[in-house]
Image (tube, rainbow, N blue to C red; front, side):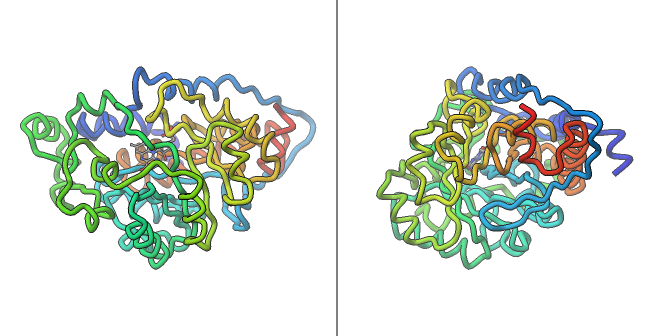
Length: 374
Ligand SMILES: Cc1cc2nc3c(=O)[nH]c(=O)nc-3n(C[C@H](O)[C@H](O)[C@H](O)COP(=O)(O)O)c2cc1C
């Protein structure tokens, strides 16, 4: 990794290279949030504001091994679900799954991925989580659950913050549709990025493949459209039905209010504190802001958190506020679009080595000990 470390020492270096390599409409899809993007900026600002106080004269051998929901992971870090990863660079879902398995961390496949659970399952080598946008039709829901289970996904993530579609203005301006339509506007942008275009031509137009069996020709519109036709805003009864149908760990994603978190006690195995990368509601607080009250409401519940993480230091900051596992969405896609599979490995390496260096500064052996350095 020495060479990559010199050229791309930070995740921001992978961001810069990815941005140059993908067409503008792809970048707008990945990078954008909703509204004025204050929730997205709040994610990084809230992390930057957190200080952790170092200690001296106490050398340590840090150990990043993390147990979550009864399972060991090599780092308290994982890959968050991102719809249409394969649009960002072809093959993303399988390569992200493989990289996660190599590193011993979780990879979460989205319902609106460009690859199916059947295609990605074996690449996860038992490190896979499946994220569900809740289908309105219980028959479709049961079918999706059995497809995920039969493909080797043992942990289910119910994303609960997408009841209503958000406006995502940048994405609309970029005129990205699903399925992708080759308008002159799109072709002109793709022509400026030959490596992306050749790779995409070779692998075929990225589509919402998992949902296709249920679409009945209803595809069309902005990215995620079939998904919106199928999904429902889940209520308590829906969650209970899902709990009855899924016998593995069940996580609810998109929680920001401590009362909502408390209501999940006894039914969810973990709570995922997230504002969806700022893509759903521009006035939403950052996970970093929401976490302390949620941790106070649920002292023993495993908490997962994400949003705006750009370094191992940020991972430790979220753990300091109460998270047990920290997920990143966009950053791993920057790694893959920048450098292929080696870029995902490198992003994980940046996070791992950053955490180890910081834990030395903080004189802590395990990540949760960081809570004593706030
Ligand atoms: C392009 C894009 C697509 C996303 N698609 C999904 C999705 O399909 N399901 C979901 O639960 N979250 C989705 N998310 C949210 C991520 O899982 C995660 O919460 C967020 O990206 C974390 O913020 P970060 O990108 O700053 O790390 C998406 C995020 C992005 C950027």
